[in-house]
Amino acid sequence: MAFGVMAASLCLGLGLAWNTGLFGGGSAAEAAETSAVREAAARRAEHLAFTEAYLDHTAREMRVANGETLAGLLTRAGASRSEANAALASLNGVYDPRRIRPGQAVSLFFSDAQLTGVAFRSEPGASVTANRTTAGAFAAREVLMPLTFENAHISAEVDTSLYATALTLGATDREIAALAGAFSYDVDFQRDVQPGDHFELIFERYYDDEGNTVRTGDLLFVALETRRGPRNFYAFLAPGDSQQDWYDADGKSARRFLMRTPINGARLSSGFGMRRHPILGYSRMHRGTDFAAPTGTPILAAGDGTVVRAGPFGAFGNYVRVRHANGYETAYAHMSRFARGMRAGARVRQGQVIGYVGSTGRSTGPHLHYEVLRRGQQINPINLRVANGRNLEGRALELFNIERQRIDTLRRVRATEATEASLQGAAATATP
Image (tube, rainbow, N blue to C red; front, side, top):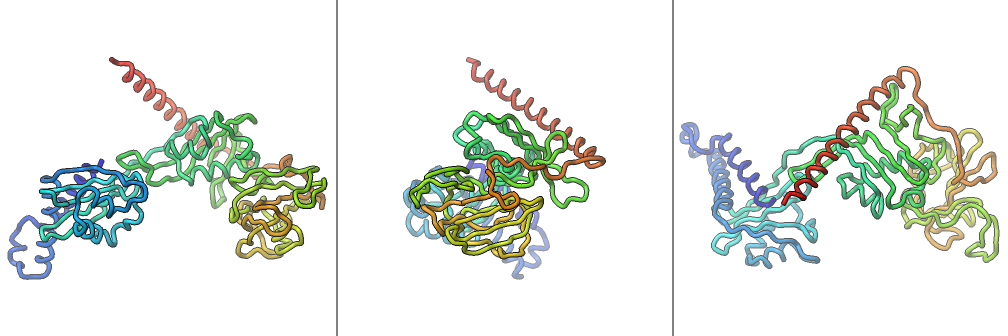
């Protein structure tokens, strides 16, 4: 890998030198005394230094140890302190050495026991090289690698967690958050998703020469199969909408009137019903649902509505109540703080951050106390069953079916490719 990084840097440098006429020409001789030619000569010298460092060197690849700095790695490899300092100084404006992490691979180049070059991946799709020039100093540059586009397909069983499994297979936080958002209306990811459950993703991905995801585009399809059964959703931008939404195979919206769990990554710590109160010490009705989460975890509005109360409210601590349509209200208690703009009369959208988990009021630790009220009476949020959001019909449904068929074709093609690759790998392993 690192040798290829140096080669890419070399090719880039030589290409620039050739295209700018640094290897000769009458015009350069005529203007030999001008500053432009002097600058070109300096660039040529630098490119030649990069060439020499590449062609005449001893290469050594090392990995950053725990607690080790880039300077420490250079000296551990045999560079003098002055050489290490010079190489690091050249990185100013190109890369911050403090970003280096344990396990990072770094390629080092020596000539006659003298450090001549350093190369490493600064991030997926980019590499940094620092090479000694003919003047003796170091010059650094960042090289961007060519990227490849694909419609990535992940179809796998959950290992330890859906999040960790998806990351291992090439997804990013962006895709995992979108999947969680699509299923947030009827799936509790803390209780419903278990190892062995199956999930599937189709998303646009750009990756570098090592297969590392550099960035992702649109997420096209999500599927999740748990003990509650399989659910599939397709991304679609309906005519007249400003952003895409999720729909099942029949064009019915994944969106619900209210979310069951208005917080991501939380643990259900106390359900709706009779319980022994942890502070008061006697049994009483618990008219909401508690979700334990670290202080500062964002709390989301369960649905579109209007804030009717935002502020301290007795034992509830920092408290927000939102009025929704059809006689429903939701309440959120024990917040550490409110999101900006939370006040009576403010309009909120479903999924908008309205505050952050805390332990204000009568509370034994950081958590969200969440209530759903229907015509003034608390009901169990976990058993909430309310109508879907917008369902497609007419021309919108026709366009959706075309897009759904395209996505299903992508799924079949990528699944076939994965099967063939697996069979080829098994055959190669079995060959003596």
